Every structure is written in structure tokens, then in C-alpha cells.
Length: 233
Ligand code: URA
Picture (tube, helix red, strand yellow):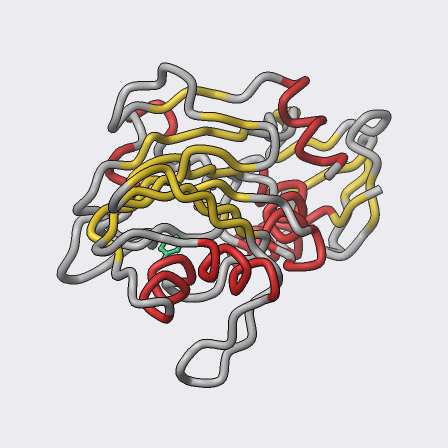
């Protein structure tokens, strides 16, 4: 069961306040009867919701993976910078997609979007502890003491305490970093706190999802199976 106004909103009938107005004006029926309560609970699988006599079939749940290039900020709009929304193809614009979490302007790689608000909140909850894997190029070379410090949970300069994380040195100036949270500039700040300032950062994996051969700047829709996997996390 879900609220009538949310169902109509998710079906792109309008914004939450527009939809409330439409419902209160008596334009919406549920199983043939006018429903004027925006908070009425409906079951979209068994009940017919009509707007001005036309049945509303509900929004298809979408989860989109983008291979983000540098130079775009993770926001739905911005006065100064280009946003990741511009990278969604036309047919996916205006479908209620929002970025899941955030990549910095300079960071590249895996960024998810969804039009399902509940899924979005579940995915960004730190309690979920979805591991996110980053490839970093940085100054200096990571050593065993850095690996141990990451595993113990770093405390950053401003007192921010990080959960245990995995640092894998790959060679001079190159490391793989796995973190389970999404604090502001987290990987860059963790690396800087060990004297290893990051010069390039790419998110390669989130949970089981990897970029695969998705080209930079391109998107693909997740399959139902991939979405179910995400939900199980
Ligand atoms: N950590 C960062 O520092 N930046 C990102 O974009 C993601 C994780």
C-alpha cells in the first residue's frame, strides 16, 4: 500500500503539491470512486487509479549507472557548474531520477541514479555499509603503516572518525581503497591524512556492481536482478 499522492508523483503526474491540488479538486478516482484525500492508501497492483478518466499505470522503477567523467558536480542543479543530470540521455530526463550519494567534481567512475526514493535512502544509509572501491593515484607510496592505520579507522584532522577501511598499495603512487561510508571528500581526506594526497580518483565498484566496459560519460540501466541484489544489501 502507498499514499495516493506519492503514487501519482512517482508516475510524473506533477510535483507533490500539484498532485495534492489535483486530488483535492476531485480529478482522481480509485476504483471508479472520486478520492479527495491525498494521503489515502492505495494498492497500485490491485486498484485502478484514474486521473481525469485516464488510468495511471505507475512509474517504472529505474536504477541507472553512469560512468561519471571529471568536471561535473553531483547535484540536480547548479548555477555555476555542469551537473551529472546533463549526462542523462533525453529519454531519461524528467523521470524523477536522483543521484545516489555523491562523487566530487574531479572524481570519475561509478555513480547510480534512481527514481525510487525509498531505495535511494536505503542505499545511502551508513548502516548499510555497502563497500565502495576506489582506484587512487597519489603522491608518495603507501606502506604497511598506512594499511594498518586505515584498518584501525582513521581520525581526520578535524576530528572526524572513519570506519575501518581497506588500503591496498598497488605500486608507487597508486592504491586501491575500499570504504563503507560516504563522508565529504572521504577518500581524499583519508589519504591526505597519511601524507598521500590524491591526484586522481575513480570509483570502480559499489557492492557487487562494477563499471565493466561502460565507457566514460555513458549510462546503462540496471537489470531487475541487479536492483534486487542492491536491495538485499
Ligand atoms: N571520496 C572522495 O574523496 N571523493 C569522492 O568523490 C568519493 C569518495
